[in-house]
Image 1 (spheres, rainbow, N blue to C red):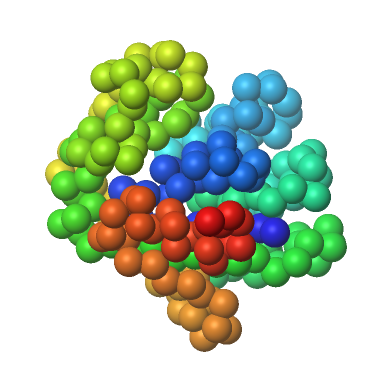
Image 2 (cartoon, one colour):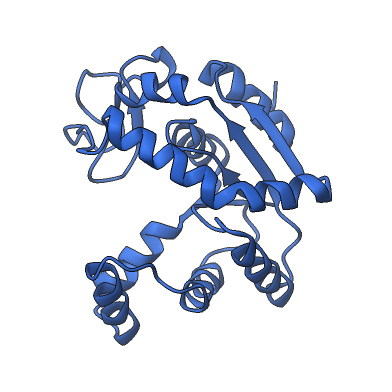
Length: 219
């Protein structure tokens, strides 16, 4: 089983990804993490990526496709996995279909968590994350609050607010996200493979919905 998340900032995919990983053993693949891992390796491709990113440009789709495929080849594909941040545009979705065909992986379950801008903004202002293990928390949600205030449940690292978690930055990221993904959303909707979830519902309710969609709810 493989899942594609389509969700604007603060829709909750970080929370749901962490819970699926913790409770049901899903692998979590973040496109951003894949790029950072390659840079950290100091490989020729990593140096190329670092140069592209430092110049403010976007990594081209051909290179990103190669990195995503390499990442998938490196994990246990007998276990379910989630893809976060890829595909984000229509041409990337076509590339991803090609990757899946080559690796003999079934078609993805596409979950679109739709959330309005105002609700997302309220959440973003209460969001904190762990700089070490990347787990996300939210101070306004009982479900996503850390057990000890300000400390990561998993690795006990002090939690941080992202510097760009402010009103102006959020609105820009929200608008940019939908500008980039509208064609992608329409593609999966037209194919009948898009599952839309109301992101304004509580994390508890939506996680229950998601686990039932994925067939992993044991209740």
